[in-house]
Structures are given as C-alpha cells and as structure tokens.
Image (tube, helix red, strand yellow):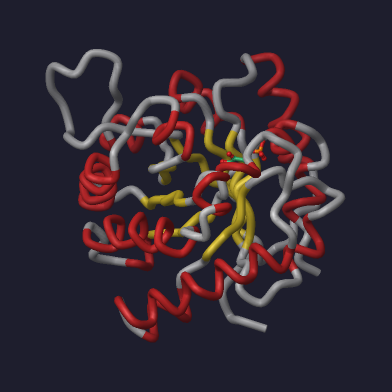
Length: 248
Ligand code: 13P
C-alpha cells in the first residue's frame, strides 16, 4: 500500500443554495471521517466564503475555476487571490466541463495552473478522454498530452492532485471499471516517472472521477494507483461520507 494519503474531492458544480449547502455541511461536519483522508469541497464561487465559514476546518474548500491573472478588466472572472481571500486553499482546473462546455484550451488551462500555483493555491488538475477518443484507442495519447501541458506549468508537484476523469463517465452513471481506472492511473504514474521524477511519480495523488458512488467506491479505492476521488453528483448526498471513507 502506498504512503500517499487518500484524497476525496466533492465537486458541487453549479448546484445548491445556502439552505441545501448548509444541510450538506452539517452532514460533513458531524460525520466520522477517516482521519488520514484529505477532503476538499469545491463550491460555486459565489458561496466560497459561506462554505468556508460553515465547514469544519478539517475539510478544505476549493473554487471550481479561476482566471490566469490576479486582477483587471475580466468581467465575470475570479482570481486566485480572491479565492484565498475567501479562505479557500484549492482550485479545480481543467475540468472537462470547462474544456468541453466552455471551450477552454490546454494552453489556457496551463496558464491558469501556473498562476494559481504562483499565487499559493493548491490545484486539482483534471484530465480525461472523450468517448470517441477511447473508442479510437487514443486514451493514452490524449491524457499524456493534457498532463504534459499541466506539467510544463507546475513547479511544485506537492501542491497538485491529478484527477483522471474520463468524459464518458462524468454524470452518465457509467463508471470506469476498477481495471480501466487502474490502467490509466498506472500509465499516468509511469508518465510522471519518465517526465518528472521518481519522487513525483511516487508522491502525487492520482484520483478518479466519473459517476463515483457509495456502491462502487470501495472496489475503485482498492486499486493500487487510485489515490482517491473527485465526486460530482454523489458529493451533494449523504453517501459522500461513505465515499470519503472508502479506503479501509
Ligand atoms: P459525477 O460524479 O456526477 O459523474 O461527476 C464527476 C465530476 O465531474 C467530478 O468533477
């Protein structure tokens, strides 16, 4: 078993309001969470302050996105400095919805990663292939290329968690099998070994996202290179606690 501590992120996406998020926070604050599992909730940016003040300090808070510079005439955007000012320490970057719904390029995601890290945020960097890419046999090529751009912009891997989220598994109920997840995670770790260092490969948490539930989390968590999860839909339900505690 690796020495990497288990990491479970809840990506609340554009869901909830003060009332429902308060309910979820009470659920998390009062739950018994495995002591060695790191938990981070990615809240809608308008609720960052609210969520940071409502969640127990043992649970981290992330923004779901940020821009690549610290301030200026960028209507509608938020900066890493603003995220930190709300007390949050993390940001999710490169999520498939940012890539494919909002058209964010690898290049832009790389610049955001660099700026977020320079600003002192920790980054959950997301990668993952689309269904047609998997069917065409290009999964490795796609995730390596995405990881490459992220890697070019990382100066301290200790501040980064890599989230493998196959696009076809997000919000579809079609989870990658434990074998499919393990296969890609193992390859990503080998890529880090070849392109960063042994230390980075051994220490970076590679987490899986895509229709993770209380029902499938334990088997996924038993895979040697699955170091945790990034959970969407189920992170707003009481079963999120079971997912946090998936690694026995
Ligand atoms: P679901 O768990 O709803 O499939 O979403 C996964 C995800 O996108 C987490 O970032």
